[in-house]
Length: 354
Image (cartoon, rainbow, N blue to C red):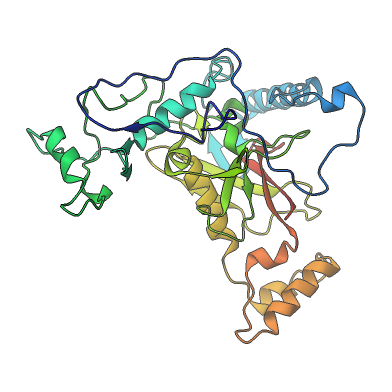
């Protein structure tokens, strides 16, 4: 591995044998960061030390003030109406409003879950899914035998032979911090959650991921570079929790800087065991791969700009005469992260020039 690495993603040690107990990676005070891609045209020309300083995902005072004011209005409405109304849904307060944000998640904690949920087994093997555990784990399972059977006589690796939820001293344990959201319990609001660093929108920095949402988030989704190499997002990276605490639903209901009064295609990201980074990326991709009908497009005649109209027209003139939602985005197709929506109902997605 190069001198550049990231504490919360990128490189994961393999478990080469089960005779040695698992030892967590040592903690570091100031983890070095992956060198992000040099996206053309995005280099800052400012000489201001304030502008060039590293961005930290801590809300500035105007944003926090807006949240405080909105929260006071919500409390007032609760006293008047006896209930809290969020959009068209009635819900009770989710959690103590200071409990979630006050427990800062260290970079290593995101990665600790990835080690547990998707460990790499055998030196020249691969990743296996270890979460969620199977409902009825077979009794008296010999973990070492299952480990050996991952490879056949020809040396081929078979991750499907692994039994999810197996425990062994040589395997990464389930981190105590990460608990599944209780079934039926109210979800925390987006602004009460801590977002995984891979999904965060950085106002004054390059996005953590280099991903054009035209492409499925696997081989064409990168974390950054080390020297002359690039690091594609891995299965453990995608297995990381999308938020702390775990949530079962995320509602993405707007495109940031979108001139339209409403997002055309709001969508939910759902996982009853806890939404992961991979769930978010794959659901975004699936949402914008949906086809658009001519009648749907015509209903937006006064809302779309010239580039979007031309992009749709080119697709419809093709041999298959098919256009997808992604075509409406034009060149604004580079994923730049998420932020809590100002209306507190969901998440805003940021896109940039791809």
